[in-house]
Length: 173
Image 1 (cartoon, rainbow, N blue to C red):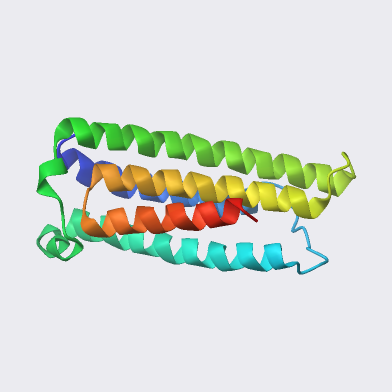
Image 2 (spheres, one colour):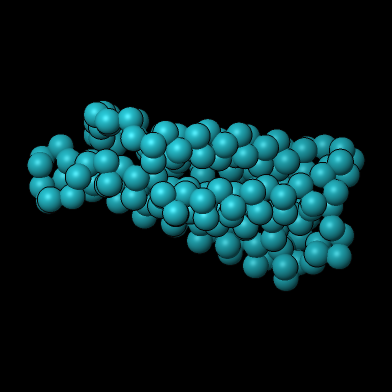
């Protein structure tokens, strides 16, 4: 993909991605599931979740600067040798796959919430919540990887690596 096509695609992708990520729970009939016991694992997931939110804001800012202020994008340390249409297309495909991943994760969260709400299954509600949260966060890491490939810069690589390390830590919980 060329830079001009990316300047159209990336803001639209971010809007759709955030729409699915943030507005899904408001649109669906999902109820809030209270966690009765504040376990160490739950506290750690909340901490990692807040770090992921900060990284999402950073990605939105990078895409905004890349699209609307390309002269200021130099502060992100762009890697010009990776700015090739084939590499950018691979990154866009990864971004589209991460969008599908997030949709599947949201559907899984809805299914888990339905099971908890109706008392179906024998898995504790906390385990279902942790599993669903891990799915969402792994989809975010996949999105960070797609951004890293699409608009390669030192900053996007650092964001991806930080997300990968946080996800690895989360998977050990």
